[in-house]
Image (tube, rainbow, N blue to C red; front, side, top):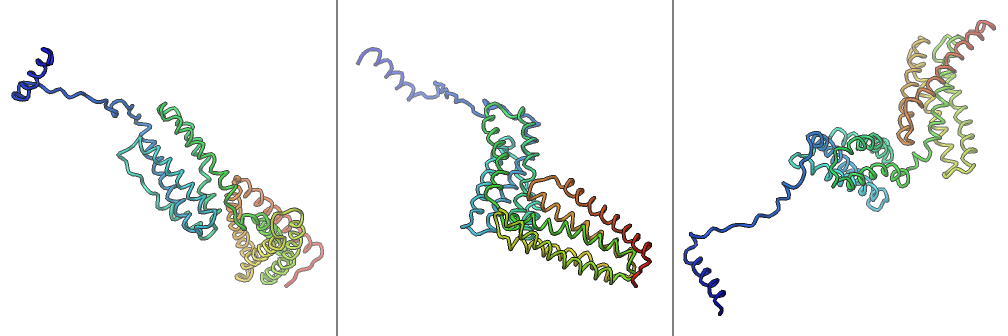
Length: 333
């Protein structure tokens, strides 16, 4: 053993015999938490809100996937969307690690209700309608995101933009395919039947006769509309021409019955017409909203277009009925 080795051995032996005389220094390890940049208060505030939204959407898509058979392609689409939203939740959660996500139960149960009543496609499109505003909001938050997280952030924004395409390509039902024929039947019935009733004000003294006139006209017009829809569907429509005719005719006749009902409940013609118009506006609002959600179009414009046409025809036929009464002197009791 060399003298240098002998010295090292003696110092090691001395340290073992008198450990109190030696200081042990622990090598420090990099503190990763200290090296990470703390999120700004504004980013933390946004993260707390967004993580709850994404968490709720993830659970919603998961619940929706359980309302269809597991073999259905819809189930795979919805589970994929649930996983995507959960990934977005994890992204925001790291900026507020001590915060627990808040499940929006009102939104959850409302969308599940819409799914049961109006179908899977409507519920999914309703849930996805806010994606454009979410993308716009995310673009405004880009300056708050640390540079190291920018790639993940951009991927999340791209995911939100792809949601609409996901639905358009893979989620479709027969109600969606034939929605244009339903809208056609409803819109025509609202315009024509309210016009017939308005024209009856100057000719009929009894509301029951005006109501019957609307029902008879509705039955005849529903058959005519069904025939027209059948012929239209034969020209390259990707669906059943018979179902197209059924959707158009049935929606027309049912609307005619609803609009005629007030005329059998009150003897006052003005009250009957006012009640019928209120029902017409309600039906128009419902079908316009359903159609605009499915087709992703602005609700107000579509609603106002048909409403103005309906009211215009109602006023025009009222004056026409008055003109017939005055010019011919005919008044049916």
